[in-house]
Image (cartoon, rainbow, N blue to C red):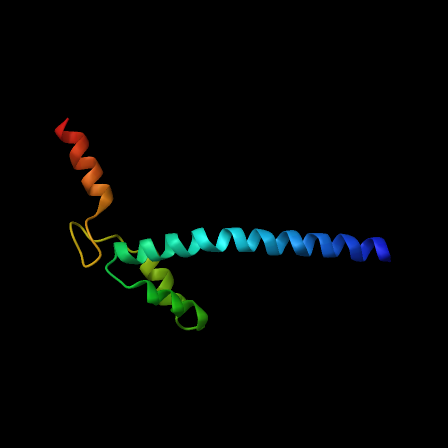
Length: 86
């Protein structure tokens, strides 16, 4: 029984470590995506409510704004327009 508990503790520690190192990039990408659709990063708080999860997912899959919005230029369009000029 001691070996089994040791394995569970090891995988629990690895899972916690994995969660910690992946949550920061996930937060950054989520905020960046929300900025693409001209929404504040605070909209991520919607995921903490059951009903708010649906609008959050809709915002994540919505097409980004074309051109400039409150959070800056659309980097993808800027990149492709500079490639076409070359």
